[in-house]
Figure 1 (tube, rainbow, N blue to C red):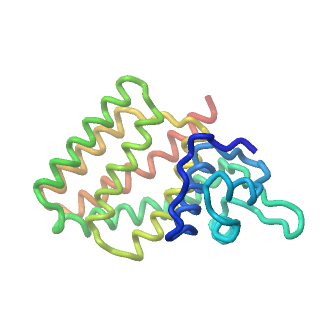
Figure 2 (spheres, helix red, strand yellow; figure 1 turned 90 degrees about the horizontal axis):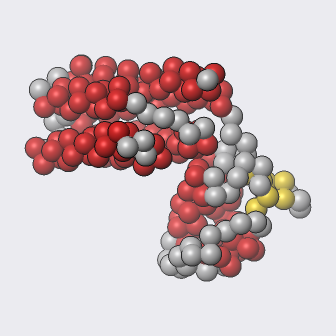
Figure 3 (tube, rainbow, N blue to C red; figure 1 turned 120 degrees about the vertical axis):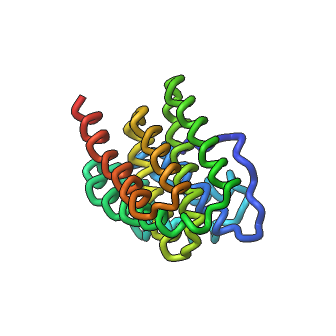
Length: 220
């Protein structure tokens, strides 16, 4: 089982959470590939923790749908289901849309400026065809708005859905386009105008259009 040799040893405090975050990231970015068998002993040694937090993290990852545990046999990374995008994005779009509406009265001028700067970085990543970085910056842009909405329940559900969407996008090398940059510009402008309705609609359309782009990419 390939594990990065330069991975940092995790701090024992909150070991389960640290292990969970690291394993989820490895599954999302393909370090741990779909169908790969996972050895909890190897993971524990690589991460500098005991096997207990690793096993606890794997149980949570199974609940999240990232691994499948076969008692007494093996634990495997689940396969990537391309069709699941049709089930993942509509609820995520609705929650992101609601976040934009809730965030408007909370976002400061400094935070709005940060959104603009983040979108500039996003545009540059697309212009230079650094699509992997573009995906990460796009998520950073939306996360800033979700954080500003300050709703714990929305945040948790988005975090769960976002992880699966991120995995789908990374494994299928989805290419975001200038349309997404313009979507962000519109969202920022509506936030400045404190127009909740238009900001909410623009956010929703931004996410739902990704379904069409995803399907077009996979047909190419």
